[in-house]
Length: 318
Image 1 (cartoon, one colour):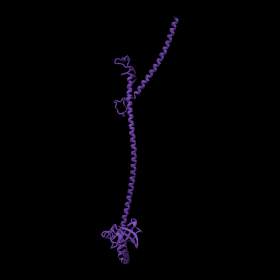
Image 2 (tube, one colour; image 1 turned 30 degrees about the horizontal axis):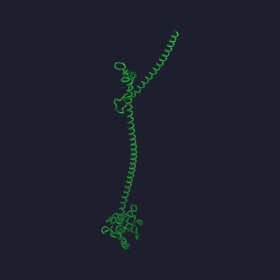
Image 3 (cartoon, rainbow, N blue to C red; image 1 turned 90 degrees about the horizontal axis):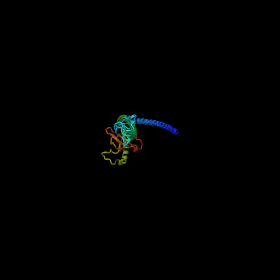
Image 4 (cartoon, one colour; image 1 turned 135 degrees about the horizontal axis):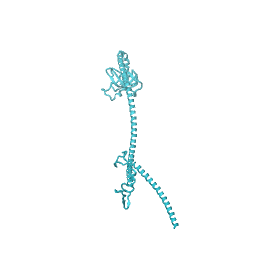
């Protein structure tokens, strides 16, 4: 009996040691589970603090600083649903772990709010992608606009250069016109002087009658040669054939001449006259203006007919 008692005592002591060891292990696991649970709660609380709670579902995506979930550890301590009487709710013989006030309900609330925020984030991404497309299109339009602006600036610069060149050309033309007016004034003075000389030379024409007779005979000869040139002109709009006058001024720069009309000559504007020197053909002149009272006429040298340079003293015939 004593031996059996000793065996039982030893067995009890062994069981007591095993139970103590198991209790220590369970205590350590409990502490580990408790630590994990605390860290999990703190993690969920920290995560929830970043989950927005918009006042309405259609809040503008650009709205900032929306309210966030604010949780504490106390809201995670109720694993079972507690009724109004303060007792755990039992359903179908089991303690109910979901429903209002439970850890499950709180986690579902955080998940639902996070899902709403994730949906809003996706909408924001879509909006950003559309904005990026619009921005790219705007950027391309801006590049095209800058290119058009650069071309417009180049065109404007060219127009300004053309305008400057045109103004310069106008100034040059004005200077030339001023010079021509001065030259015209000088020529008018020269013409007046020549008229005085002509009056003085009239007295000397008697000495030239013999030369004039010879010239008239030559003119009669030329009349036959010029008969073909008179075709198409009526007696009312063509000068009489023969000697019309003599060149008294030649301006090679402007390609015109001043002619002294003979008494019997009758020059008409736009009439082509033959220029003769002795018995040689010099060229042709087209009458541009006639001063009948002063017995003077202006004419343009026809370059295509010119055989030699027109000179002062050459005679003109029709």
